[in-house]
Length: 218
Image 1 (spheres, rainbow, N blue to C red):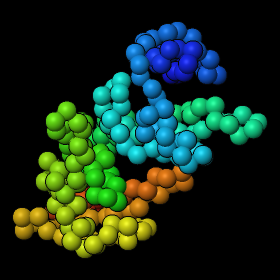
Image 2: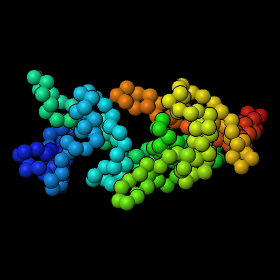
Image 3: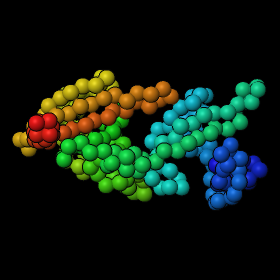
Image 4: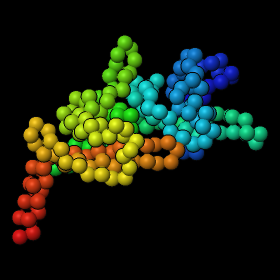
């Protein structure tokens, strides 16, 4: 947990916390660091309700993250502070890499802006790149993974605005003359999450799966 205010002289104190949220042990002091300027804090303060922050670079972990934020008020509805729980994008990469979709299939998550969140076929943390000391998001269509980039470019060629994608939709497209099956599903949750989950599988992989099932049944 993080504590900062007039009583800390503008510094932010990071504590380990008990299961009920009490501060236990001081872990680190971040000099002159104000959490009120961070995207997650401002998201909770501005919406005045539970919400997800935009994706941003975490100041401690030095990785891209997003935070679910909850503003806390007193009985006169004066803001006391904002509670936040962080989710690091590297964990999303790790989870997707544990999913097997045939031998060469890929799974990735992207924002409706086209920015990549995580992918099963890429190195950890490669959904952004550093330019002039700042982290810049990578478009899924420009991903280092060829299947991810090809699938994202196909979707962008079909839709001028990815906000038009709803529910689950199936497509078929080609990469280097090879047929690919693609499924895209909207992942929309309350408090602001609105992503697209995409699965792309080569037709050859599906044929092998069918052959294996038939041989197993017989």
